[in-house]
Amino acid sequence: MSVDVGRPREAPAAGPPAGRQRPRRRQPYGERAGFGYLFLSPWVAGALLLTVGPMAYSLYLSFTEYDLFTAPEWIGLGNYRRMFTEDDRFLTSVWVTVKYVVISTPLKLAAALAVALLLNRASRAQSFYRAAFYAPSLLGASVAVALVWRVIFDNGGPVSQVTSAFGWETGGWTTDPQYALMAIVLLAVWQFGAPMVIFLAGLKQIPSTLYDAAAVDGAGWWRTFVSVTVPMLSPVILFNLVLETINAFQAFTSAFIVSGGRGGPSDSTLFYTLYLYQRGFVDFQMGYASAMAWLLVVAIAIVTAILFRTSRSWVFYAGDGR
Amino acid sequence: MRRLTWHLVCLALLAVLLYPVLWLLSMSFKPASEIVSSLSLLPETFILSNYTEALEGSAGIGVWRFFANSLIVAGLCVAGNVVSCALAAYAFARLRFPLRGPLFAFMIATLMLPTHVVLIPQYTIFNELNMIDTFWPLVLPKFLATEAFFVFLMVQFMRNLPEELGQAARIDGCGPIRAFLHVFLPLSKPALVTTAIFSFIWTWNDFLSQLIYLNSPENYTLPLALRLFVDQTSESSYGPMFAMSVLTLLPVVLFFLAFQRLLVEGVSTSGLGGS
Image (cartoon, rainbow over all chains, first blue to last red; front, side, top):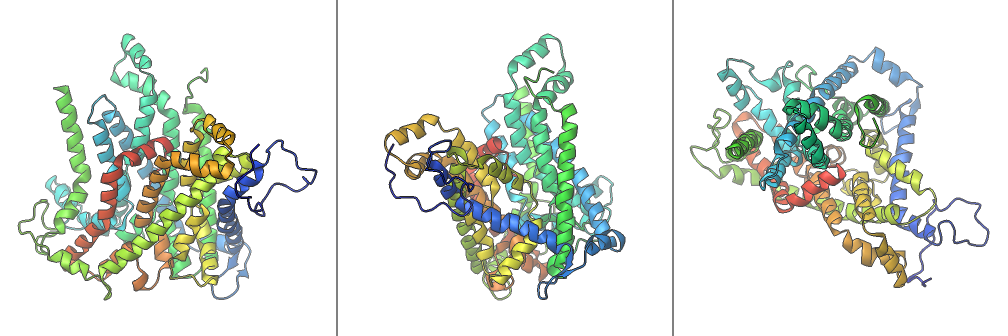
């Protein structure tokens, strides 16, 4: 064995479990255990100080009234009770967010899959198109694009001009409670590039022999899509579905900018995270906002669990023997 | 013939998709009278005054200040993410130590954790440390590998490097530290570059945490300045607002054009790349 250059410093506090005081044994981890924690130490510090600790603290805060300046005051389940019994805006924000998740996620994935299918053919132009369709995913999260959205969907803006040319008088989407959320949904759908790229990678993994066999059996385009593409792609569909659903629950910038930070008109774009922000960082009701944050964690965990549970019946893993 | 139809369909879709961006670009060169009212992308009169007005900035602070602030924050975040995530990824991917499995599982779980649940406690911590209205709260966490996405991306990459490399390094007398510095780090360059680019773009676009932590206009980053600008803007002065939006998006677009291959491959191998 070599003599190591530069003796490693002592492994950080979260080192190997105690009770290993017998003369140092090489097995099962050898002398590398210390090195592992040495390299991991920034991450461990971050996980403890910025994730685990804060999670525990916000759980505690969720049972208190806290305004940042005076000490938290224990009120038990008070925050949670208020949410569901007294706070209509909270219930509105839940409803708005559920609508947004349920509408935007399937639309975004459908667009992503459709374009991935379109691009999935042998052509030298493919990588150009792939990159170009991906571009909005990088731009869309910005304040600048959200501003563009606000003006494009405003009264007299390009969108209302186009729709009225087709005889559909919408006026300004962003100022109409009926349409404001749809404008933000469209901004999410516009960023279908990232899941599209993932779908495309998945499509390339499907063995061409399956398509040959389907063609020999006389299957048409739709039949092949339903019986070959979708089952073979289903793990990727699940992956994108989970990821995009989780993302959608946390949408913030688009709603904030399009509604000018207020979630209007008449709370029609009051996203959960936007309301959480207002409660926590505008009204400084940090206990209430913490309770909302924990509820969001629980909601996301439940929805993810449900998606995985139902996936057993529709996700097909090749080599599963089914 | 079918090829041609395919190209036409792709290009038509692309035109619709990129219309908002092109619209923004053209608006930024239009005088106030033409803005909003017209659908057409080509300005009838082409002006630059929107840009000169935008460069004056808002709240008496020039736009370059906001640009510099954004650059400092993004630059430090890039450095933090690349260094700390590479260290953590090397440990997860290449070293064996007790509790590696559970810790890795925990790291993956934090991928799904909404940031909101740690937002308020982190705010109180940085408040105690008197760091509100400084760049520290935005930058420090990155040096502690809190961006699990990048750890994951690099773990995936380092795992796929051949096992023989580690053995060869050991035989040549390299300990884990030298093996990391001289073998694995140089070989992981594509993953490091991908991490750097994504870190830059995400930090550049980030809004929520900058909104929370930065209060005084001289510390504002571009997204905050843009928002400030909008609040002071009436419909008649959309032009400068659009010019400033273009300036804000420009670095992202340049990064995209320069590194689009790496970015797209980063997305397709790791699944990251959403907003």
